[in-house]
Image (cartoon, rainbow, N blue to C red; front, top):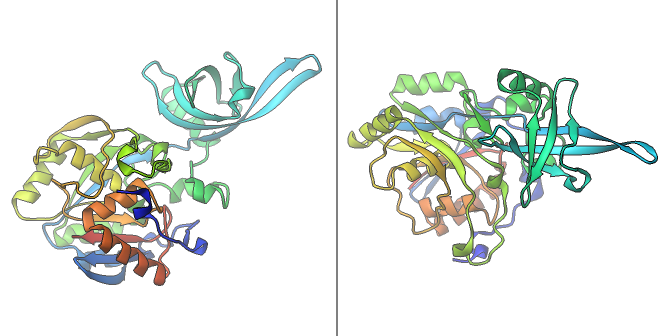
Length: 348
């Protein structure tokens, strides 16, 4: 497989920079076999059946973008440098791995001040990352980060506008619970509580799993031969209850439909044997055409970047030709793309 197999031309005006309001008013493309219907997310109640099972990623996005200053005494007096930080993940020793721009302006031991309450010491560097030790921990750190930080919007949105206070609501699912992601499971952003209630009343089941989405989700594929791509790793967890409930749905003949590629990748990581079991750890599963899905019967997902690993995943689920047709239909009918865009439900 070649990277060019997953390319397509997308008009720039179809890249969404704000979500639909209300959330459930977003368009919903329903692809079942070779049939396509144009609905809205609020119509999910009519698309799903009693006994279907939605798998929801309950990761919570942290306001991981920070803007601070480094102060240093020089021969010419106090020197100040603006420093931009994107937190990636906490380390076992209590530090945070982060992307820092410009890292060349930092020396080990120097302090970056982000707010009157929040600062960090630059304690070391890896190949492309810095390691920061913050002055706060626990709830105090969470509160100060929430005040000082901005949501880490995807590059294709950040290039068009800065993050603002509205993004702290818009870029978070209504069921977010487990802190640790630096990107949202974006298919889940379309839900409101009334829709969950109506689906439950119809007999649709729900399970929560956790996959902390990392910045690696936005890394481009740089190799033409897809087999040479090294997939990023993310931490996930499937509880024993979630695994048992999902397997009970499969035994009863119901459809297991993860909401988002993150939930899909997680349950396929935990269910490679054909039986979903309690699971915790890092996954770098790379789903491309030819992959045999063990747990997933359908997928609710947004529209993805050309030549991305997520285009490969949906091509694996539906077939490469079918996805080309689906995306051509979406573009022709002015669906909005990427994280704040419209959604689809793919039923092979």
